[in-house]
Length: 478
Image (cartoon, rainbow, N blue to C red; front, side):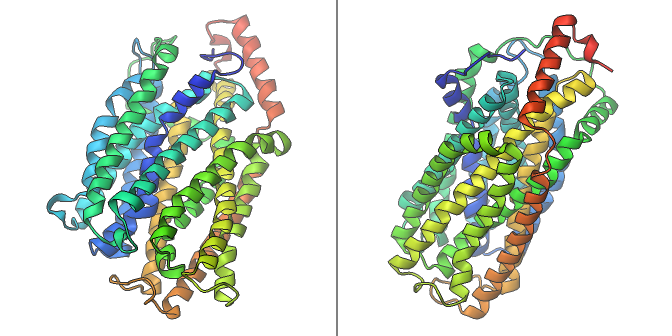
């Protein structure tokens, strides 16, 4: 039984969404600043930075499903999720600060960066997986779930954009601000504080609604049972189709974000005002998403909205680069160039977020498919899988961007306006080729997601009938 029936109060939507600000802080940091900080500021090789972050994902590949598994099996008077949300943000904030203030103020060793990255990723999973697992527990309604994710994405983007605004106006001012080490210290501290406040604040706001002991006490833990249950959940056909499409879409977005600081500085030659306007454009694109995504879901359904959004995001995002290489673009660094680029960025980022939110909302419907087949609910395991995909994609995007930068042979001491076309052209072409392949792959698989609104509502009716017939739930078990 869901925690709410019918329309969800606005207060709950806002409070549940606020928790996603921690993810937004992490996403903007990892996607926009981390590679250029360790490469251009601290002097680490871009390829090694990308490799360290990719290797950190191997630990995630093992740990994330278990975080979801343990979240599903947590039994307390406050329910399954709240204990995680009250405990995990504190060490997460400390690790986040260390990430941007390495001991001694110098680049850590390869293994040092790997250890910090692993700590941040695991602790962020311990916050995000329980939070997002609450969505299908709060409501079973097809559209209300989308609404909750709309608020989560809006708040998540707001958290990331707040950090970007602080970066460009307070911590890293000026065209060379992102290339100076001192600003990243305050950036890390501010991000850590926002992470704690958002997760703890959301947990407190939801406490009365969700702080109830689970209906059934889980059986004693056994490692073999854990592996078997995780394997069973991740073998669900609908989840595998989702994972194939979402992985490509998330990697594409991760590549675009992580390379953006390089192209903004060296291709488009942003000045201080242009950098400060960047997060504003992103914020308004998130607002447009908030308006259009629900009507698109009603008209096209979640799968096709996700697929078309992925293709549109690539089309809008790469058009400026194609025109630039064809010498059909205003001179880089001028107001016409920046303004025109921001028009394409606004439309491309809106399309990308629409695709992401549609894909994420699709996971909620897999919960009932799994429940119908096994008699068990597994919100934590499935959203751990979704979270793992997102983090793998972010890491893969940074890794790909690092390899693109390395292959293009961008100097570690590069300055805007001094990089030749012999470096910029291969950088742009490699980025475009990778983005095209990923967008096409994402659209192919997301459009084939098998759960529609009609099948979801029919399944809810069957589960409701079974629950009324056998309140213990034994009738659902194979």
